[in-house]
Each structure stands twice: as structure tokens, then as C-alpha cells.
Length: 413
Ligand SMILES: *Cc1c(COP(=O)(O)O)cnc(C)c1O
Image (cartoon, rainbow, N blue to C red; front, top):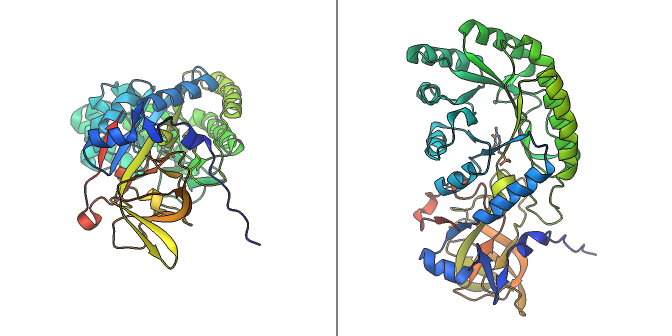
């Protein structure tokens, strides 16, 4: 007997108000918002949801924890500007992102740059800007010192450690074993000695062990190990640890059967760990860097149904946007098995007529599938198909040039 498939956690769709069968985003009905934008497809991000998420998170976390926004999750300048007003710092992964971060007015002291393969010109830009540079290799450190000398500015440098542990049960592991990120834990003392010789301004550590975890125990364990690792390395440091970035990893539920992450136990455990940090690393600010957890649930992708057909007794809806704007929803951004994102017909919410349908985008590839046999309100050409959990790793993480289709528009409401 076939098992009934697990349902999506209801809170995601229910967290958006409905007016006369229309989904609302930022108090605007979706049909009207589509008119205002002037086209489909578009992304709409709700600023109040971002603010609310951050307020909720802060209420559960230790008061002195610094919360940074990892802007690669959603680099839209208006979003970054909004986030800059409510977080303690911005983490960038390129000089292009650094520009957007500095444009917000965020102080350079609260901006850090990570990422493998920083080019000499990017390092020079970062030094000139005065942001913290998380070095990821011995070569990079030497190049950073060259740029630092050339400019006559001592670069502020933190060491990105490739920890011996990993964030367990996470969507994307970024530590534990051979990795292209950071410097292996065992080699860090040698790198620290070199930083002292080069007379750079040592700021601390960056320890990022993984992403997209929904297991509080796993996050607690990784945070614990990160802080203990920094304490253990403190004696080898050329100066006091002022910044201790313990990564992020807080996930959001995308797929049926997943539940929202409980943050209360994380805050509780972190408060205890931070007591230890205070004792052994008295000058350290403890920082978490979060991307999707802060912005992912605040965004929707909206595309219009342009065709409706039947193939071998299965209903298909075809939309005017697809994986060219939203690669992750098609299941092709790092997922091993394709699963359905939460979706709805945004102008037919709570609609009495339902059907099982699949939804395909406009690209000539079977990969362009946005929903696979899901129960949806019975939809017609002209209706709006909405994908939730789309505030992070949407447009900027998609192959927008593929098939030269309509360009997507992003709005912050
Ligand atoms: C991608 C990334 C993040 C953000 O990850 P999320 O899963 O979006 O929270 C944070 N820090 C680093 C170093 C990253 O590479």
C-alpha cells in the first residue's frame, strides 16, 4: 500500500494573510502587486517578515551575541540596506558584495569578507575599505600582506579555520575533512605565527562548519566545538581574539515532513558557552552569520500560468518563469533528490476546487519542473503560481541567461 506523502509544515503558507482568496505580501494583494510590478515573473520580499524574524531570534539568543547577515543569501541592494539597519554586521563573499554592503552605510568594522580565491585586486579593495578579511590559505595571507604593504595599511585579518568537525545533519557541510575553504585546524598555529611576522592586525577566527540544519542538537554541538577550538588556539594567537565568528547553519523547512528549527535550546546552550568565551577570551565578540534563516521565509517567487494541458491523464500547468529564476525550487541547486517546495495558486487561496497537477517552467528541459504532482487549487491560464521559501538563494543563485527568457524583477515590500 502506498504511503501518504508527508505534508508541508503548515505555518509557512499560513504566515501570509489572505484577502478575498488572494495571498498578501507586505499587506498587498498578490494580483494588485503583480499589476504594480507590471510583469510576471517577480520576486517579492516582505521587509516586516525579516524584521520580525530578527526580533524573534534576538529574544531567544544571549544579549551580547552579534548577529551578522551573510548577504550571498539575498544580495538585492534594498534587502541588504534593510538588513543593515537591523543586524550587527554584514558578511560578504566578493568585492561586488562588499560594494553593496558599504553602500548601506554599515561601518567597515562590522563587515567581513570570506571566500576562497580572493584576487589581489579584491584583497586590495578590502584592505582599503578597512573591513575584516577572513584568510583562507597561506598564499592568500602572503598576497594580503603584499597589498597591505603597498597601501601602507595594516590589514585586519581573521583566520578561517577548516575545523576537524562538521555540522551534523546539515544540507551543506563546510568542514570536517578535505575542503577548499579555510585552513586546516592543525595548520592554524603556523599561519598565526606568520601573521605575527607580517605585522598584520589580527582580529580572530571564522569557523563555519555547515549550512541548513534543522537539528538544534547539531547546531549546539558545532557552536560548542567552535568556541572550544578558539579557546584552545588562543595561546598561539599574535594578539587577543576580538572577533569569534562561529558560523551559522540555522536552516528553514523547505520540504514536506520538515519542521521549523527550534531556537530556544540553541540560545540556552549558547549562553552557557558564551560564559566560557568571556572567561577565556575576554575581548572576543561572538558572532553568528546567517543567511537564509533571516530572509528565506520572507520571500515568494511569483510566476503566471500561461498554459494548461493534459498528458497521459496528468494535468500540467506551464508558467512564464522557471529554473532560470529559481534554480533551487526546481531541485537543481545542490539537492540530491528533487522535492517539492511549498507552492500555491496565489490568487485562488482557500479555493474550493482542487486538483493534482504538475507545474513546469518555460525552458526546454525536463529539469524545469516547479511542482511534481501536488494538490493545488484548480488553476487556469492567467492565474498566479507562487513558490514560498524563496527569499534566499533565488534569483542570484539561478542561471538567468539560460534560454534568454524574461528577466525577473525583485521588489521589497
Ligand atoms: C553561505 C554562507 C553563509 C550563509 O549560509 P545560510 O545557510 O544561508 O545561513 C554563512 N557563512 C558562510 C561562510 C557562507 O559561505
